[in-house]
Amino acid sequence: MNRKLLYILIAVAAIAIVTILLTGTKETEPPVTAEAQKGTFEVLVYTSGTLEAENSEKITIPEELSSRNVRIYEIKISDIVEEGTVVEKGDYVASLDHKAVEEVLVQAREELEQALNEYEDARMDSNLNLSNNRDQIINARENVEAARIILDESVYESPSVIRKAEMDLEKAKRTLQQEQEAYKLRVQQAEARVNRRVVVLNQRQNRVKELENAYRVLNIHAQKPGMVIYAKDRFGDKIKSGSTISRWMPVIATLPDLSKMISVTWVNEIDISKVKTGQKVTLGTDAFPEKKLEGEVITVANIGQPLPRSDAKVFEVKIRIFGSDTDLRPAMTTSNVIQTGIFREETFIPTDAIFHDDTLEFVFVAGKTIVRQVVETGEENENFTIIKKGLEPGEKVLLERLAHEKELPLEGMEIYYEMKRQEALENETEEKGMKTEQEIPQQGGNGEAVHGQNGTGR
Image (spheres, rainbow, N blue to C red):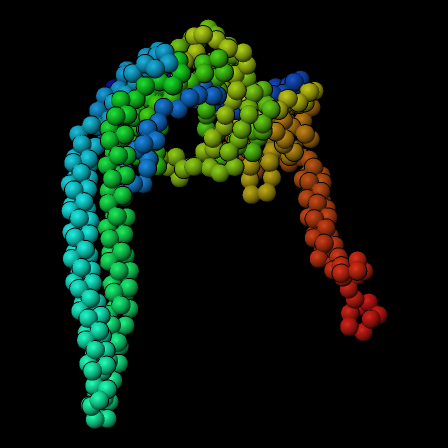
């Protein structure tokens, strides 16, 4: 029994030792803190962009292909020089599909030949028909002469015979007049028929001529010296050999002016309200990371565009680069830092130190004891936020939320109430302004206010 009791005591002691080792007396790690700083605070927006020339000469499909009479709406690029090729004025740049134009030209020539045959047929038919009509007029005129002779010879005949002769003469004259009037109408009809054929013939001749001119300019040459940069189609893909272009999107390539470059970038809808024209920008390029460039925002789009496969929207921003650099090339990737604001002598802390509940913004101030401090925040950048009220420089704040925060004292509620009063005052001022605008009396034609119907103005 004593040995059994000894084993039990040893087991209990072992369990106690293990428990002490596992739970131990290890001290709890202190919370991570940050110190409120005071100084210059910069609000920066970081984006990536693509270099483009601010000014460039567009290489487009020839104007001869844009004619409606040509009726070639799309055409393929059969060949184009390599992107980045430096060309001089008059150098070959690209060639369009000759076969496509040849097929249309052959068909147009067939249509021209058909129109010419129809014109000749119409002209011969008109001549033949009018010749017959002229013969009928001659016959009618002879009938009038014959009836007149009969009338003259019947002078000694009975009155009935004379009357019949007179009626025959009148009838012959009417027939002659009808044939002459009908001939005039047939001449006009024949002229109209032939003129319609002439119009169609001229249209077919002009189309063949324009197609022949278009065929001669399918090899495209540079209008000025520069570096060839491929254009993009409506899907954002670069134009290349085999791509299809049209008169609605006629640009094949561009010859950029490399002395004036811009960076085209996209800013998300969260930050776009901060970006304004004229703001300074620091730029870098992936190709030359050691180079730092300076620039400024020149345009900010008013309408956003959705990101592919996302609900987020972005806005196009263009940045002009100061000076010129011979190393810069279109399509290079840039890293842009847009300086949207500089604030002097401001107190700021890491954004991670600011917490929220349903109504309040607060921080955990670490002093002799930890308290929840209500704060009023201002501008923020990618890491820090300005604290307008609630903190002093040098105070330390926790960067992690505490599980027992509800048990900590809450200070600075007067800041919250002041913010609410200010918000209510601004809303009241805005409502008064809107009401005043609605109550402004309309002006009559003589410049006097229009009052009520009773003339009292009440």
